[in-house]
Image 1 (cartoon, one colour):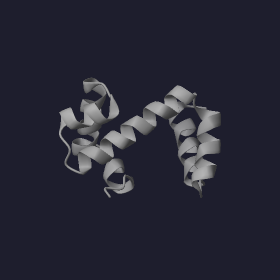
Image 2: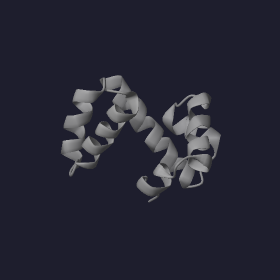
Image 3: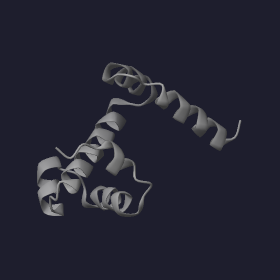
Image 4: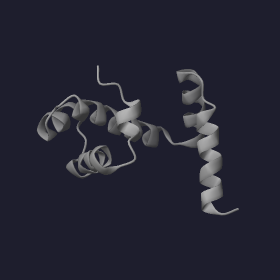
Length: 90
């Protein structure tokens, strides 16, 4: 099976997640604890960025690297819109 087909199957699997508990179960099986922590850190940084926090404020609150924060910023500004659609700004 080619990579695109495997990615498509993963997206279909993710689309079936109905609850936070289901998401936890799936991510615990798919990822290492460190990978889940890193994704959570990026999602939180995106939330702070979308709320108008500065780079310095986000780094202080999350201890995220400036390179990773830059990647999050690029995704927010030029990516597919996932952060804007799914990250709550409250």
